[in-house]
Image (cartoon, rainbow over all chains, first blue to last red; front, side):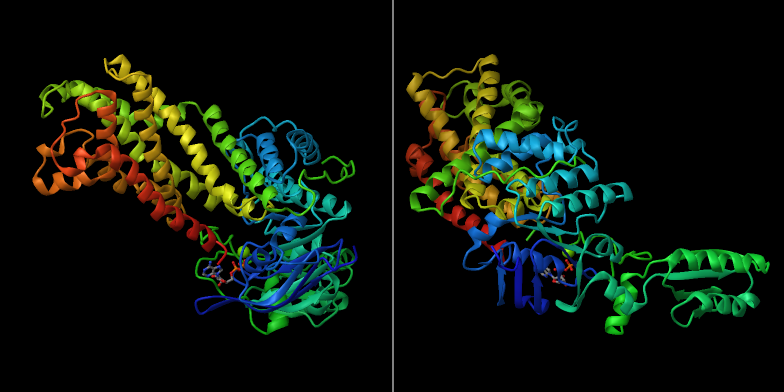
Length: 337
Length: 283
Ligand SMILES: Nc1ncnc2c1ncn2[C@@H]1O[C@H](COP(=O)(O)OP(=O)(O)O)[C@@H](O)[C@H]1O
Ligand SMILES: [Mg+2]
C-alpha cells in the first residue's frame, strides 16, 4: 500500500457560530508520529474526531488509510485505533476483560481475542494488573490499557488525543515509551498535544493549529529554529548586575538577550545548551556576581504562538497554565454530546 | 515495556466486506458481546443488586408490616398479596434509571466513542444495553419474588399464568430501557442522571403500586389509572390471582390488553428518539 496515511483537505466544521475547524489541511505520510500542537480550543479534538469517523464534517474531504471518512467509514474504522481525551474503559471490568471485550467487538474469535489480550497485556506491562478492576488502576496504567485497546487490530493509523494530559511525569513517560514502541512497529500516529515538549519528544513533524487552521507545519527542529530553540535564563540577585549578565549571556547566545528589569531576568536563545549553561554559570561565579537562579528553558507553546501569529495563546477563562503548558485539560467539553 | 516486536496483525473473523447477512450476524454477535459485558458487571459486583433492590425490599417491610395493617384493599383481599406485584412493577418502572446511569457513564467516559470508532455494528451499542438490562431485570425479579415468598406472598396461578405475569413485568422494563437510553444521552453527567429520580419516583408511585387509585382524589386517581405501570401491575395481579382492587373503568377492565399496548407505545416513541440521539453524537 502506497497511499498517504492521512489526507485532509479544507475541513470545515462549525458549532452554531463557533468555527471549530476553518479550512484545516493536513497530510500525514505513513510510519511517522505526527504532532498536532495547539492551545485549548484550537480544534485538535474536532479534527481527530472527524478523521476517526466520530463526527461528520460540514465541508472538505478526508482520506484515512486511503478511505474516505464519509463514504467508507467502516473501512476507515478497520484501519484505525482511536484513543480519546479520556481513557475509554469499562471501569468495572478487569484489564483483561476489557481487552477481550474490545477484541470480540473487533470481530476476533474468542480464542484470538484471548490470545491478543494476553499479548497486549505483556506488551504494555500490565500482566500483574490484568486481573484487577480498572477502577484500581493509576492514571498511567489506564492510559496504557487504553492504548492497548486501540492496538487490538494493530491498526495502520493510531489517533491519540492528548494522551498525557492529566498524567504525572511518571505516567507521561510510560505513555511516551508505549508510543515510541508502537511507531517502531510501523504504526502511523497522529497525536494531539498542548505541550511543545511532548510534540518535540515524540513527533517527527508538527502541525501547529490555531483557530481551526494549520498555521505552521514542519519538523520540531525547524520550528524551534524559527522561534530560537532553547533559552538560557539567568535571574540576578542585584538589579545593578543585570548589564553584566547581559554581556555574559550575549557571548553564548544566538540572538540578542532579552531583559526583564522588574524580575532581574536575562534570557536568550542558545545553540549548545550545556556548554552555554556551564560557561555562563562559571563566568558569573568567577566574577563573584550574585545569581539567584540560572537554568535552561525550552521554548513554550506560548512563544511558538507569539512568533507564528504575533499574538499570545488566548486566555481561556478556565485556565491555570504554567510555563510550557497552556491550561488544564479541557474537561468542560467532555464527550457528552 | 516489553521490547518484543509486534506480533503479526490478527485476522478478524470478518474478512471480506459484509453482505446483508454478515451484517445481521454481527449485529447480533456484537449485541451479545455487550450483553455479556453487562452480565460480567453483575458477577463482579454482586452486591450492586442488593443496593438496587434496597428500596423495594425496604418497601416490603415498611408497607407490608408497618403501614400494612392500616391499608385496605377495595373489594377485599390481603394487603400484602396486593402489594407484592405492585413492588415488582415499581422496580421495573424505576429500572430505567439504572439504564440511564449506565449510558451516561459510557458516554462521559468515552466508551461510547470507542465503540463508535470500531468496526462493530453501531446498533449493538443500543440493543446490547437493552438485552443486558433485561437480564438484570430477571435477576431483580427473582430476588424480589424470593423476598415476597418469604413474607407469605403466593401466586395462585399455575406455572404458565405466573410466568406470563413475570413476562409482562419484563416487557414493561424492556420498553422503558429506551427511555433510559434516551435520557442517558440527554443528561450531561452522572449527577444529573441521579436527579432523574425526581421523574422515576412519581412515575412509579402515582399508580396502583401501593394504593388502589379508587382511594385517591379523583384527578390523581385518573392519572394513576392511566399510568402504564398500573396496567402492568393490575394485569399481573389478575394473572397471579392476587387481589387486584379492580374498578369498573375501561382502563382497569382492559388491563391485560393495555399491559401489552403501553410498552409498544413507549417503544414506538422512545426507541426512535434514542436512535436519533445516538446518531446526533456525530454532529
Ligand atoms: N460539540 C460541540 N459543541 C459546541 N462547540 C464545540 C463542540 N465541540 C467543540 N466545540 C468548540 O470548537 C472549538 C474547538 O474545540 P476542540 O476541537 O475541542 O479544541 P481542542 O481539542 O484543540 O481543545 C472550541 O471552541 C470548542 O468550544
Ligand atoms: Mg481537545
